[in-house]
Structures are given as C-alpha cells and as structure tokens.
Image 1 (cartoon, rainbow, N blue to C red):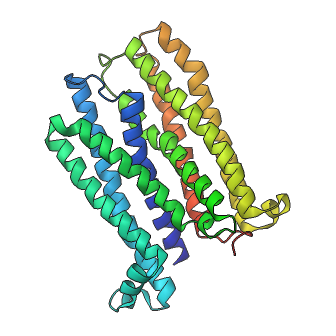
Image 2: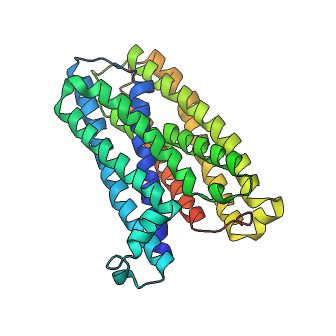
Image 3: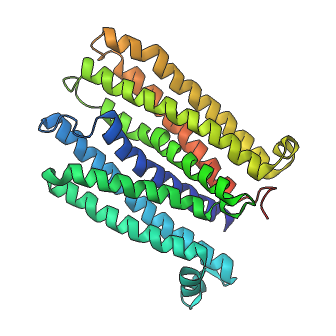
Length: 307
C-alpha cells in the first residue's frame, strides 16, 4: 500500500505542477496574447490545451487513487471493502484531508470543462487561460494544506513556504513540457528574434523560480528536519539529500541552456540548435520527474520535526 500511495502522490503532484506550468508558459513565455491569428500559434495553443487536458485527467485519476488509499489507511478496512461502506463518507466530510479533496476535485472538474471550452471556442481561449491559470495556482497551494508543513509546529511559516515552493516548481519544472512542445514547432514559427525572446523569458522565469526554490527549500527543510545531523541519520533526511543532489543537477542543466545556447540563438537562425536544445530540455524534464518522485516519497515519510 505504501508503494501505491507514493505512486498516487507522485502522479497527482506531478500532474498539478504540469497544469500550472502549462498556463504559466502560455502567459509569461509566449505572452498573454502571443501571436493570435497565426496558424502556427493557434496550433501551439491547441497542443498546450491538450497537454492541460491530459494533466487534468491524470490529476483526477491519481486523486481518486490517493483518496481510496487514505480511506483504507484511516479506516483500517481491507482495500476492497473501504469504499463499499460509509468509511469514505467519514473521510470525505469529516476530515481535513476530505475537505481539501472536495475542493480539489471540484476545481479539477471546473478546469476540465473550461479547457474543453477553450479547445472548441477559439475566441474564448484567452479568458480560459486566465481562469484556469488561477485554478492551477489554487490546486498547487491547496497541496500545502495536507503536507507535513501543515502539521509542523510553526504552521503559518511552514504553510506559506510550502505553498510558494510548490508554485515555483510549477513555474519552472511544469513549464519544461510546454517548452519541448514549443521547440517542436516548424522552423518557420517565430525563429529569430521572437524565438530568442520567448526563450529569454523562460530563462528569466526559471532563474526566478530556482531562486525561490532555494530559499523556501532551506526554510522548509529546517522546519521539518531540525538539524544537520538528522539530515544524515533519518530516512526523511536521506531522501531530502537525494532531492538536493538531483536539484543541483537540474539547475546545472538549466544553467547550461541559459548560458551556452541562448546567446547563439541570437546570432543564428536557431534551426541547427533546436535538436540540441530539445535534448537538454528533455534531460531537465527527466531529472524534474525524478525530483517529483522523491517529493512523493517524502510526503509518505514522517520527518523528525513532525508531531
């Protein structure tokens, strides 16, 4: 059951991060209006909305699995009996986890309906992007309400740090998949100044998100672990160390993209560099997915600072 819970947590957190990253990419990297009316831009928007659609489906399925596993854990019933009794009603309506899950499931349903509207109604896409962007932020922030930080002694600081940490991860790691989609566009699509501008915006966004992740990560780790010794002597601390190592590699790959490739794109058409840039971004995605998997493990592992 522990493995299933880790898988459910990882999939749900990853899908939520991807959802926010998709719309952050659209609003910040491409700009609120982008190149509305362009066939290439309209096709890119459709692809991003499809990505958001699949992330919402993954979020819904993983949320249901996570809820089922929590019902099993809280009720002590066998897995196949947990949802056939009133146990699930007690968890859903009488626990903090259940109330948060009501909010999340409702927001996922609303977001899915809006994304479907955006796919059908081209004129409504800008409004859809704005609304679902706000929903995605609430979905990420609400994850902090059921995290270890919510149970820590310094609750307000822990909750704030965890919420900001999740949003920063959404802006950076969640934006990598949309960036890959953007880089797969035909060479005729905005290569040159427009392409370099979009890449520069994403690089700046990533730099800001990394800075926030470092500050909030240190704060959250100290609140939950409590000491340097616990970092090396507890299971939670060792998992956190693994996360830090992967995070360092992730930052290194991102810095390589920022410093070594962006300047060359300004001087060239960019077509020869696209395969290299795509490979680097895909590498970032893989390490980002590994970091999210460790976050899933951390959520199922009680830290030393947990009451």
